[in-house]
Amino acid sequence: MEIVTASEMKEIEQKAGELGMSGERLMENAGAAAAAFLKKTIDPEDKNCILFCGRGNNGGDGFVVARKLYEDGANVAVVLTDGEPRTEDAKSMFDMVKMMGISVLRLEESFDQIAGLMDVVDIIVDGVYGTGFHGELDELHQKACALMNNAIAAVFSLDVPSGVDCDAAKAAEGAVQADFTIAFDHLKPCHILAPGKGNCGYVELCAIGIPQEAADGVKSHFHIPDEEMVFALLPQREPESHKGSYGRLLSVCGSENFVGAAVLSAMGAMRCGVGLIQLASTQTVCHIAASRLIECTYLPLVENSCGRVPAEAIGAILKRMKRSTAALVGCGLGCDEDTEQVVSALIRRANCPLVIDADGINAVAKNINILSEKRDAVILTPHPGEMARLVGKEIEDVERDRLSIARAFAQEHGVTLVLKGHNTLVACPDGNVFYNTTGNAGLAKGGSGDVLAGMIAGFAAQGIKPELAAVLGVYLHGMAADACAKRLSQYAMQPSDILEDLCRIFVEHQL
Image (cartoon, rainbow, N blue to C red):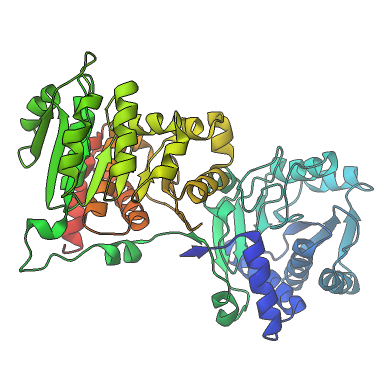
C-alpha cells in the first residue's frame, strides 16, 4: 500500500482538477464521506454536535459535515477558530451553512459559551488544521484543542488531527487526541508513524472521488508492505536446484563475551533459506557455536587480547568473501580498533552486499566517510541509539524525526538503512521508504536485532535486491514475533523462539 505526503496529496488533487474534478466537488465528497462514516459510528439524530472549523480547506470539509449532520436531525453548532474561511471553496461551503441557519460561533469572542456547550456535546468534529500544519499551536488553538480533548464526547478529526504534522508525524503540544480520524483518499505518514499516529485513534480511509488516473500520475516514495507483496518477493525453490543456487553467506560476528549474537544471527539466516553459511569468528566463538549450529561451516580465527577478531585476520576473511553472495558483520563483534579496521576493510573490499549491524555500526559511526568507499551495496541496521551516533544527534532527536533523518542518511550515503523501533523504517538510496507494521514489544529483548540482521543477510545472499531483502527481513521478523507472542506471550518469548513461528509461517504459505 502506498501512502502520500502532504505535497504529494496536493499534486494528486491538482491532477484531479485537470481531469475535471473541481476542488469544490472534492470538498463536498470529503465532507460527505466523513459524515457517512460518523453516521455509521454514532447515530446523529437529536445529538448535540460541535464542529471546530479553521479558515482553510479542512474547515471547508467541516462545513460540509455540519450540513450533513444537520440534515440527519442533529443539533449543530459550528465554531470558527480563525474567523471566516479564506479559500474560495471553503467560502462556498460556509455560505451554505449560513443559508441553512446553522448556529455559528467565533472561538475568541464566544469562548465561555463554547466551553459551556462542551458539557452537553455528544459529537465533536475537528476541522481546524489539515495536512498543512507545521510547528506549534498558538495559545488560542491550544485552548480549542483542549476543549475537544477534555470533553467526554467522541472526537472525529478530518484527515489529520489538528496540531499533528502530516509528514513528520510530530504532535505539537496540546494537539487534538482524536478517537477517530477520517483519512481522505490516501493514508498519510502521521496515520501510521509514532508519535503522530497515537493522536489519530481509529483511522478510516475514505475515497473522495479522485480519479485513479490522477493518483497514478504521482509517484509516492512511501510504502507499507503487506503479505501479498512480501511473499511475492520470496524466491521459489526449484526442483533441480542445489545449495549453491540459494547463495553463500559469510558472517563475521561474535566475540568472547557475545557468542550468542553470532549464533542468533546465523540461525536467522538459516531459517530464511540461504544455501550455505560460514561463520568467521574467533576460535572460542566457533568452538561454542559449532555445538549449536551443526549446519554451518566455520573459519576459526586467532583472537586479540580482548577475545575479539583481530585486524590480522582481514586477509583470511577477504579470501573467503570472494565466493560469498552476501556478508554480515558486527553482531557481537565488540568495539575496539581491530573491529574498526575489520569493518572498514569489508566496506572497501566486499564484492557482494554487506549487512552491518551492532558493533559494526558503531565502527562506521567513528568514520562515517568510509561509506563513500563502499564497493558494493551496504545495509545498515541501527537501533535509535546507534542511529544517533551515526548522525551525531541525541536519541530524542532521532525519535522525534525518524522519517526525515533515516531518509536523508540513506540518500546522502547511498545505503539501505533499517531504523529499528516501533514501525521500523527501511529507507532506500533512491528516496523510497517502507514502513513496517508487524512486530510487538516482545521483541524488546537482547538478541532480536541479531536474528533480524541474519534474516536480512540471508535474503540478500539469495540475490534479492538489498532494499527488498531488508523489507522482507523486517516484515517477516515482525510477523513471526506476532505469532510467537500469541503462543508464548510478549513477556516470555525469546528472540530464538520466533524462528519456530517463522517456520510455521512458511508452511502456511506453502514455501
